[in-house]
Image (tube, rainbow, N blue to C red; front, side, top):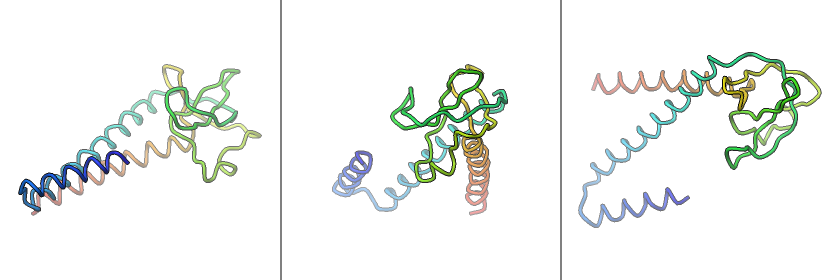
Length: 145
């Protein structure tokens, strides 16, 4: 929310100082592009870390607050040790997605601090691939105009 307020104040100040609307739109497009690049870079880092993770059998344990953040994450037990998932849990479909009665396959990170469940794997793979495809498309669009 603060981010939107800061952007609004900057836009109002720019308009009062006489900055053209075209320049403001170019700045907004650059800001969106930087946010997009940061998201693709972050997903790329997680994707590379996923490539070096080890496949393990695990049982869903619980959903609780992440030890590294403020979001709730799913916890999985592997060989008696509990590991948090790398991404926040999906609260809307919690009862459908996370069932403690069955074993599932997860990927244990190299540093053994977190796991990638099937939803985290899908997020990394689809997000990174879609980000690269969108970047190629936007680059081709700018080169043809």
